[in-house]
Length: 106
Length: 197
Image 1 (tube, rainbow over the protein chains, first blue to last red):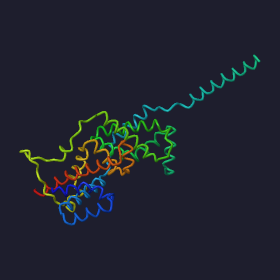
Image 2: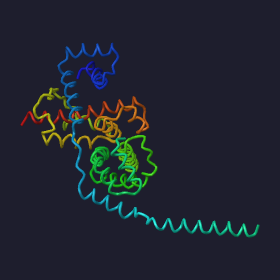
Image 3: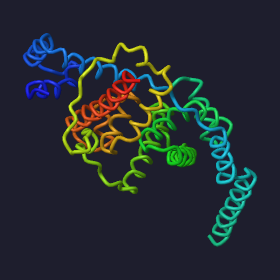
């Protein structure tokens, strides 16, 4: 590879993202007109990016999804609501009792 | 956040596992795919998806809904991937070792540069090429692979990638360029081989 080509190829990402300033953009395009090898690099560079962007999502194995749901079931047991109510009721009863006894003392 | 999803999130916050499962089904493939591409193997990707799901379910009451559930869930998974990579502390692969193909006598092989971009085989319908691409993304050194996956495949802006990885935007751009170059070289090698046979 000619040294001058190497200098231009470093800018190919920035060129494809429209991030080169006007002067560097013009110099690169002038070089591309006269350099079929750099054109080939640019086109294959562009194609590589496009292929990567189009890669499909990988399917999640069914057993992995089931295992996650199983773990959720085991690790996060829902609290029975009645238990909260009982505790609340007890606290309220104690508070009321305290208030009553204070009133009596007063 | 769309209304239907907001209802599901609200139900899941209250401990409704069925609602959480619907949300999980919607986002698990994207999360699993990214984790696989960042970590380079399916076993670690499965661990991340599992851990992210449990963490998300537990942390749901704290989820404010400023972003979509998917974005929030995805961030949890990405952070877990980064944590895993830090723990693994893989030996860095030199860029030279990745990019230079040498002949037995130690002299650098000079490549004839050809434009394969219009080759009919340059399509994801070509299973061999698709597998090769996945393999080579997985084979990129960590420091290149992560920004590459976040930017090129997950479509996050450079600024966001820089924030997630705690590096400068210019470092992200440099790493993106290097990963694209490495992958382009690998594909070029494949097409050169394809031409011969």
